[in-house]
Image (cartoon, rainbow, N blue to C red; front, side, top):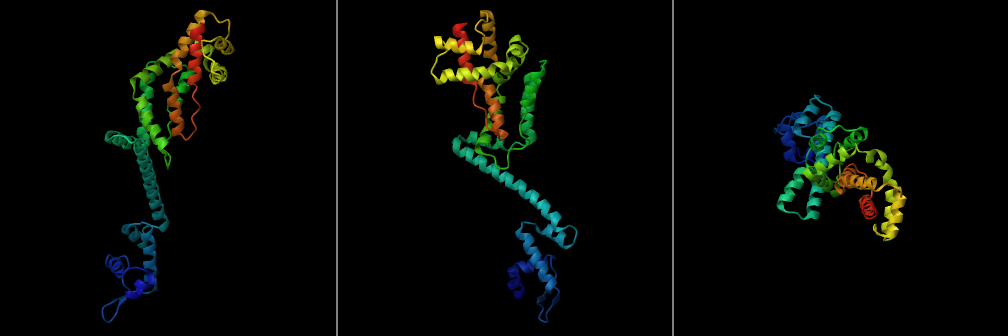
Length: 294
């Protein structure tokens, strides 16, 4: 047995244990009762050692040696198990980094861990429930239906190596959709989608607002100034009646919401995309300019 130990690099104890458990039976016995193994048995010891070093359990090894399963089949099962274990370890690392960065309380730490470990189905259920509760009883037009579909756009799984930012994004998103104020604001936005302002301006107002209002802010032009009026006239028609301007302002105050924009930014982070720059400062400037020169 000592020679087998030297040949295979295994300990005498391990060789005896594998032999006693029936994995590799002795080929013969010496006159003194010592176990003897032939070349085939030594090869089996080498195979068992290789399989064990790969983390394959003794029962699976026994099935391979008995030809009840192939090495490839067992390797595939163990590879899948290792994938799951690696994913769990990476997620644990991301959660720990998030906790270390946030420096939260014990309660926050527990919540962070719980939320980060929600399954893909549970995560999607949170969002689906939020969308259904938000838009229930509202007849959505085609545009609103598309938006509601987009708002469900959670990834099936967190990335294999989620960043602390993605863990943070999921926690923040869960907090956001849990707020009744946010849900009610989305309902008002959905209802506002049926207004004449939505059909007349909609997304068409976004491009000129970002171009001209952002330039105004970069040049420190205030909304209520004469220069602000000139900028406003580049965004909306100068001859727009006062009552129409007031209606436009009210519509913008409803649909231009920082929390809704944050929702899209968080979804982008979770889906591995770079969030779009915030449009809220530009629309806030536009609303103030309409109010000042209406």
